[in-house]
Length: 314
Ligand SMILES: O=P(O)(O)OC[C@H]1O[C@H](O)[C@H](O)[C@@H](O)[C@@H]1O
Image (tube, rainbow, N blue to C red; front, top):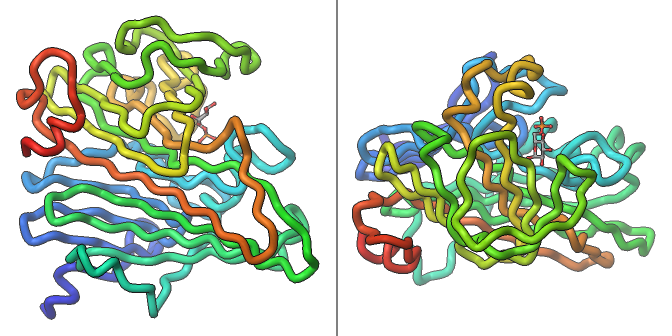
């Protein structure tokens, strides 16, 4: 295998859909489907899967893949006139054959640049021209970095407005043993209560029933502690002020055709998002959003997690 193929392999996935596998020397990997521009797998050097992907996920056009990291664009949720979470997760993206280089200070080789542009079909439901770029990169230590750039390419002088999210499904051993740190005391909109605004209590967040909350103006770092596995996910984000936390729990799980009845026990969505204050771009303007996730052993943390420490003590 050529060294290029070791790092970036183009192949076919489920139902013959195009897939790209990113690999790092130490054994970490990530898989990205061109359908949805969606990451569906992220593994550490022990080849352990870190993202949740439903055993009932469908890999068929017009339906989003249940799990991994769907991209919600140009609309998050049902706030707007478009289909739930926008159409980007249901479109086939293309690979940029000539991607812009990484900053010279980094030495990433396992990365892929995807592009989604307007189609004549989509212009009927969202009357704008745009270029939506996604770079998925696997760092030498196995960190998974997603960078999005969205540009208004309208030629009619019109601005457009959008909301956005990286709808990350983390794999967890047992949801009742999971704690999220970094969202304490923040205001949130409760999707289960008509998006009414509340303030979170002072304690770290734990789970014992359905949750669907949009935390507002959150810190740039959020930690998800999987006690059972002694693993901590650290999510760092930029340009995405909000964070959505979602678990459907048992009743809703049963109502979803592409989700197993008990699978809610093994997933938690923590979604870096820009929802409360939509982004407006004039023609020629570009927005940039970024998320980086890493998985570190929780034993590095004593008591309350200090994500900074966890990140650098690897
Ligand atoms: O079933 P989907 O359209 O993929 O949405 C799954 C979930 O996504 C987000 O987390 C929303 O906040 C939830 O309200 C929604 O149920």
